[in-house]
Length: 239
Image (cartoon, rainbow, N blue to C red; front, side):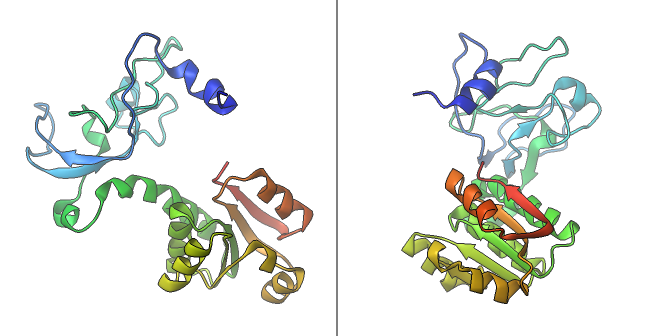
């Protein structure tokens, strides 16, 4: 059975008859450069997955803010006439052509770190920054302690949010979060009782709740149990 979101959002942006190579989180070595670039041959770096349309590229607008962006290995950029260009090959290609604006050198970091992780790290880093900009200071509830959930816990703590509670049913992931000290509390779903929430939040509810797992039952539980304080924030990253 085809996923409705994919059918609605991804399929229309794919060009029929074109081979699609997946992979939008990757890093590699530069083996060929354009004459107007400053990047050096042999440099190792990672790539931002969203790339700008030619019109945005001329204005030095990156893929984050270009309204007609493409994603490597998923869909091509949107043309002025509303059609979609062929997608640029993804990270599973032997070689991939990317705009210089998408390239981020990593230096010697590649020797000790899987640099393809830098791109997905940006997702949760932006969420954590946004929460702080919205004045979230005292308590944050995160559903999920998978890779993105752990990253969000770490970044939120780094940015100074005081009480971070993570909900995780998987024993291994829950213990891993505790071991690295990612959250102040990493508990089972059934341990998130009304007494626990009221004590931690002074009977007000969490300033922000972020779902990083993506289960509909989580959204239902958040709303039914009034876990968010009045004028609080609900983030649906897992959606």
